[in-house]
Image (cartoon, rainbow, N blue to C red; front, side, top):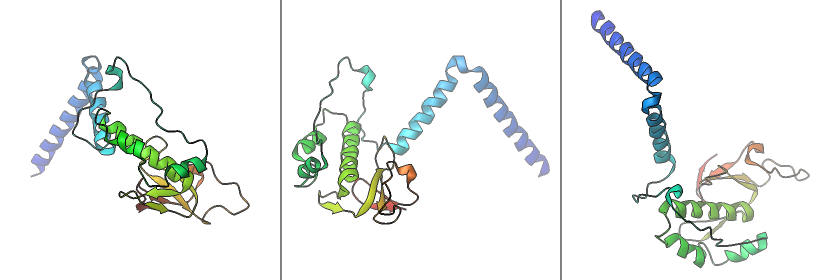
Length: 186
């Protein structure tokens, strides 16, 4: 029994040693690049929902066009744009446009919902109905992805005479919400 344990430990140590040797000498053969690719794919599988539709990286397009879909300069303009619910007709048309890669439409939806929540403290459930939350502040949980918003409930963190914080890092407490207004954590 003891001999088998030593044998397994020796084989494990030898395997680790071979892998380390290969990794240290295989940079030229692309081994390290392959490991980075595997790590990146694992990250994408965890954080980006799979649509089942293959996407073409932007760098492979010959020409692409940036189009401004919507502009609201003031919070009042933003509130007026969503009085009939979410998504607005122009946005619903864009989100259903299958010529736009699925992931781009997904992130556009997340960021639009985040911008509305951050500026109006209003979320929209999957049916498009408003969910207003009384809060001192609403911040993106992740500055780029915006799949979650941090809601600082009214009166919890900031005394009335204080200046409201400008970034989520300055808050010491809050609730995490999905772009649809569902509470997912504290």
